[in-house]
Every structure is written in structure tokens, then in C-alpha cells.
Image (cartoon, rainbow, N blue to C red):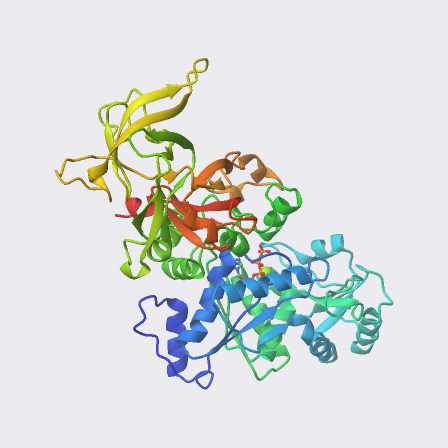
Amino acid sequence: MGDNENASNSDFIRSKINDDLKTNKYNGRVHTRFPPEPNGYLHIGHAKSICLNFGIAQEFTGLCNLRFDDTNPEKEDMEYVDSIIEDVEWLGFDWQERMYYASDYFDQLYDWAVQLIKTENAYICELTSDEFKDYRGTLTEPGKNSPFRNRPAAENLEIFTDMKAGKIEENQYVLRAKIDMGHPNLHMRDPVIYRIINTSHHRTGSKWHIYPMYDYAHPLSDSIENITHSLCTLEFEIHRPLYDWFINALELESRPEQTEFSRLNLTYTIMSKRKLLELVTEKLVNGWDDPRMPTICGLRRRGYTPASLRNFCSKIGITKFNSLTDIALLEHCVRDDLNKTANRVMVVLDPLKIIIENYPENKTEDLDAINNPEDESMGKRKVPFSREIYIERNDFLENAPKKFFRLSPGKEVRLRYAYYITCTNVVKNEESGEIIELTCTYDPETRGGSSPDKRKVKGTLHWVSAEHALNAEVRLYDRLFTVEEPDAVKGDHGYEKFLNPESLKILTNCKAEPSLSTAAAGSSFQFERQGYFNVDPDSSDSNHLIFNRTVALRDSWTKKNK
Ligand code: ATP
Ligand code: MG
């Protein structure tokens, strides 16, 4: 067995597992599971749970199952199953042959319910939902026994059989565990185990008319799969006595144990699946994989890498208290990863043309450019230079203040990997006053970006040769919400008014260096001085490239946490 005591990211769950291994609690076994309900796409919060469950299995030479918790046919769909499989795989985890569905256990779960009825641990209740609430009591007052609580087992069985056969209408009866209506924990006051739902299931079709509740199906599914450590988020802490009750009442041999940790909350982000679904169905975003979404597929499309998400999950750690994580940490993690792996290229987002008057017409030079200064092994590429180039419009100011080190009339700047140029003339639209192009001269002695006389130029600009430029569209993303905690907004639709109207800005007239003509969809680049970008799958051909900005260059996390 692996021993994790010296792991740098040890936490209370890993310590507990180490203790369990020492006492040989599960004969040295560590077996976890990731149990998504297929009622939506996975988000970054799920990534935390995936990294924890699969990560622990790896570290302790254990196993981790993927289990679809598909007990509610009304909200679940195969589309979600497929997306979950894709996302967990993409994150880099492997469940081998252990992909399961709670619906695979429906027969077993039914048999166990029959057993609970026979041992007088469960009964059929006919209270209406209003009566049910009334009998339930409150946090300060005990509940009252249902008048159906002492129905004889044989009668319970008969009705339950009819419920299963679809002979009874929805809401008329439920099967309840017989625990204690005076229990201080409301979840222990005879909770519902089965309800009638006459909706067909995405896997079992119309076979079932009754479906088990999560609190019943979950511990029993864990037990069936011989899970040792059932890890879930804090809101289930109060359900834990019930989790244990079912396992005890059925006298199961495989006795998994539930441990809770705090869920991930991120600033400027909503994480509730219901609200994410709303964003999609109300077309407030362009689908589940909109790069502004906190979904795994949205982050993937945005250019986040599996390593950056795993690294983020390891940095946030596992604790028992709820907190809010700064989204700047997530951005820091992807920047950190792409800095090492992404090739540098030059792309002008808002082009301003320059004519270099003393550079020969029809001449092209192929200049050497370094792909990644962080990693020499990533090599060099050629970038064409010619008489007409584009620079960034905001790299020029006609009336520049002293501290402006970029281009202005009479000033000299370096073109990255190319030459020093000096601005000699500004051409404007006579009517509007808008700058149309600049005239410059270049110093042929400065090829490659340095001068033999060592004269200093402060500014270095990125550029693209006009004749060789590829046309590109660039999509700039900002936070989807304008407030730190949009999820905290009460009410059903409250968060909508905090949607950031500037969260997507599309630039359609960008100019990219020609090396990008072969860039594959999904591949990431650092646009010099601009940030990290990836090729969007919407890109059609090499002259209509579409890029997403993954993240800007400036790191607000490192700054804040120095
Ligand atoms: P919702 O509460 O939005 O309906 P859920 O959390 O119940 O969604 P599931 O599909 O049941 O969604 O989640 C699968 C697993 O992922 C669960 O074990 C759950 O605890 C965990 N999980 C979900 N959201 C987060 C989060 N924000 N942080 C950490 N773990 C999470
Ligand atoms: Mg859930």
C-alpha cells in the first residue's frame, strides 16, 4: 500500500485514510468513487471532487469508480452521461472497467426495500405532501407518527408491489423508513425511500414506476461497489446518520464510510447546475461549452489545460469549512502551465498600418523568432518581414507623454526580432482626423533587434507583415458576472441582473503571423504582449482563424499573494 504521510498536500481525509490503513480497517483497501448525477455538465467544482477521489486512489494504490447517480429520470439524460465521460477522461483520470450506474442496482435496491418492509423497518404512507410537512415537526419540535406507521408488513408489501407494477398514481403513496419521528435530526424522521414516478428512464426505459431516493440509493450503491471511503460535500454531513442507518438496518457486510469536505466556491462564478442549465436554456450564454462557463467543457474550449485544473485543485486543498476561492488563482494556474508549454507568436489585435519608406518594395526577409524563451528545446521559427507591416493601434500616440515608450512621431522603437524603426509621418483621414497609417524609416544595421552602437530604445513592439498576415477573429472574454458572489443572490433569477454585458468582445479584424496557418483547433499560444489564446473549433480555414483569449498576461494572483 502507498503511504501518503509525507505528501505535501496532505489533508484531513488523507490522514484519516492513513490511520485506517494502520488499523487495517478495510484490509488495507482504499476504494473511492465519483458519483455525478447526469442532470447537467460537470463544472470546476466537480473537478475538485474528481481530483480528490481519483487522486486518492492513485496515491494509495487504490481504485476509484465512476458511478452515474441516475435515480431521478425526470432530469437526467444520456447527453449528460456522454459529456461526463468525456470530461473525466480529459482531466486525465481512468476508471478502467469500473463505470457503473445506480440504475444497474434498481433490482437489488428494490429487494432490500422489501427486506426493510419485512423487518418492519419501512412502511407505506398515504399522507399528502401538506400533511407530511405538518407531521414532520420542526428543528425545535418533534414530529408526529404517521397514522400509517403501523400498517402490517403484508399489507405494505402488497401496496409496494402494486406501486412497482405501475398500478398507483404518482404522489398517492410513498415508502418510508421507520426510524424515529422524535429524532433531533429531521432527516431521521421516517424519510422517504421510494416514490412513484411515471416517467421513463434514460437507461431502464419504462420498467420502473418507483424510484429510490438519493439518501437510500447512495449508501447502498457504495456498499454494492465495496467502496471504503465515500467522500462528499459538507451539506451531506447531516445525512450521515441516515447513510449509516440503511447499512445497519440491512446488516450489510460491506460498510463504506462517509466523510465530508467543503465544496469549491469561486468568485464571479455560479456553480449550481440548475442555474448553469438556465444560462444555457435562456440563451444567456452560447451553450454548455461557452468559454465563459465554469463547466469543464467551457474551460477546455477556453484553453484551460487538464494540468492547470489538476494543479488548481491541488492548490486549493481539502478542508472542512466553506470558503470562497479567488478566481485569480485559477487564472494563475493556467498561465503558469501555458507559460511553459505555449509557443509565442505575434498577432495584432487592432491593426495600424506602417509603411517603411526606406525598405525595398517586393523584398521579404525571413527573420528568426524564438518559440519559447522559457524552453530552448521548443526551437525557433521564421517570421516574414516586409515594407508594410501592422502594429497595434494603441502602440502609437501622436502626442505622447514623456513616459510613453512606444511609438510616436520622431521616436525610435524596436520591432521584435526585426529592426529599429522611427516614425517620420502620420497619415490621417482629413475629415475625421482618424489615423490611417504611419510612415517610418528603419535602420538596416539593427537586424534581429539590436544595434551595433548599442544605442538604447525602450519600447519593443510586436508586428505582423501586412502582405503575409492571416486574417483572424479574436474573442476576448471577461468575467461572466460583475459581482463576487452571484450565487449568493436570493431568488430564482436574481443573479441575471449581475451578468457582465462586457463578458464577450469580438475583434474581427486581427492580423496573425503566417506560422499560425497550420495551428490545430484547441492548440494554445502566447500572443506576445497580449496573453494566452487558443484556436477555437469554429475556425474554418487558415484565413479565417478564430482565437479565444484564455487569460491575459498580467497575473493578479501573484501580485496579491506576494
Ligand atoms: P447541484 O448541487 O448543483 O445539484 P451536485 O453537487 O449535487 O449538484 P452531483 O452531480 O451530484 O452534483 O455531484 C457529483 C459529486 O461532485 C458529488 O460528490 C458532489 O459532492 C461533488 N461536487 C459538486 N459540486 C461540487 C463543488 N462545488 N465542489 C466540490 N465538489 C462538488
Ligand atoms: Mg448531487
